[in-house]
Length: 316
Image (cartoon, rainbow, N blue to C red; front, side):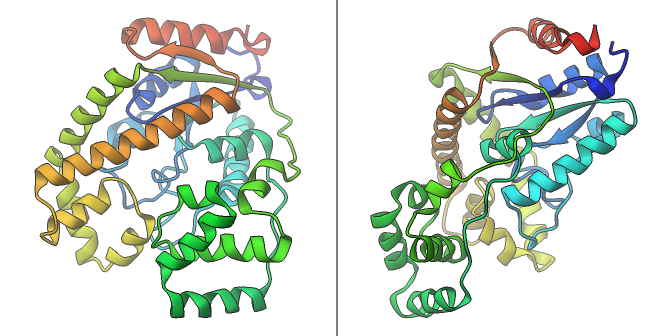
């Protein structure tokens, strides 16, 4: 174990959805005496449990966990917010002489933690107001098509009904003359001074689809619809819809009679597979990591991940 955990590299267990990141991260955190930090854009919401796959309440009681319930539905999450919140958590964890272990599948959150805040694209209240007036007249689908013509990368990751983010992307392009996707890729960043050890779990696409289907069935069996109904009864239906969260959208459709359970599961499987493909591509092209086959047994995965973490000279 580390002679001085404060000097040790931060660890991140990352990869596509449904590859088993949570299970490995919990075991690895115990092995190297680390605090677990959320790196998932849905698990940061306190009200979302069943549908996000966050660590169980028992696991969160077993050792310190951070940022898994940092926000409430209706509060705004962003890579900028995460960069600040995660940096504060890492400083606090290290001040207690413990290691930091991030876990999640959000590439933008990982980049925010490891590279710092990117230069922010500009704002202009007058342009924003003009775009919102156009939105009301033309409708969200037409504005989304307009965005696709000038910034296809951003349009591809935004739902046509996501009025706020589509409007923001159009505002950035109108003000700066550059698409929001350019700002995400090229704006100057302040790199983290920390050292990082990244462990990515990978799985053959065909096997991953089977894992996704198994997990989807489990979500519905373990109360996803009931959790969603409870959120509606608490008056949180609208902020939940605004997230466009996989699983919750389909549970809403089932509750409202717009889908059967079989259809809801089919939609979840399709959207999750599409997300996993984007995540695999992002991690393969954007990060250098120790890549481990998720089909290895739990004991072998832990041994290899621990070896990577303990290879850090600071913890020898």
